[in-house]
Length: 316
Image (cartoon, rainbow, N blue to C red; front, side):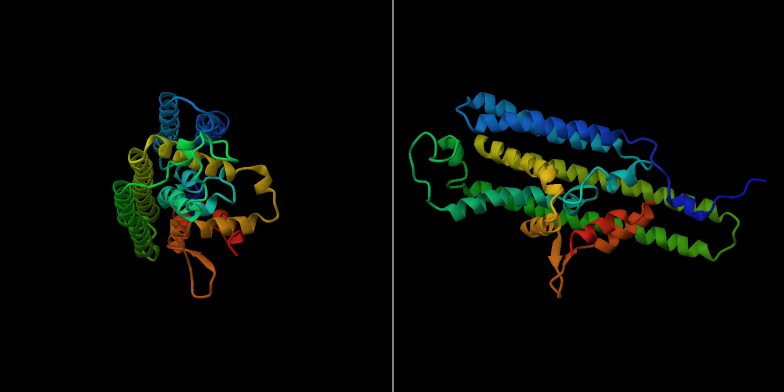
């Protein structure tokens, strides 16, 4: 008679495929080598508005196609790898929520353009075709001047939606975790007959809901990016998408990753994106809201604490 498997095996199912990691590698290479240089070329030269518009559409589609593919890859078998992606480096991990960029990062990036313009004030008052010392046409440099009230209201509406949607996602995670732990606790001291089957059923239901939460988070990210771009002018949209691409590429540069200052850089990046759901506790130590919930979710789906340890090592 075969020896029954231990209960621990229920929580350590290996993904059947790592194809999404291969997709991400190709996707990132295309972003870095093709789309980012093209839009930078358009912003640094007197390209026609039609060509710039075309390159904006291509880059936007590249980002949206990534989340579509991420949804297609979402399954109970692959979810542990998608929630805690091994292909993300130590600088990227603090910016992740449910496996990918925190939705607040997109609005914070947009706000950074507005804040930068406010700080610069009227330093560059030249009327030349290109601003002195900068290889950018005048219309690009003036893209964030005199931002309309309509755009500011648009940004406020997006941020208001995020303040409702992000906590709702976290509440759903807590509910899944609480329900799963409650069912396991009920069965743990019960008769052994059928215990394994009940735990497997509880695990299956919890994973199904986690997949649903994961996909809703991706839809939220797609929606935020799309809504932001739809409210921007031609040059504003180009600068925003360029900034997003530069942010992703910058976090993966080898000279940054290999630096012994990488922990400090990570901390500074976290502070610069204060609205991503990070906060300072009373002792002044950087903490992550609902971090305990994420760690519990890590246990729930059968992953180890490697990711959590990596985050801690670059936070303190």
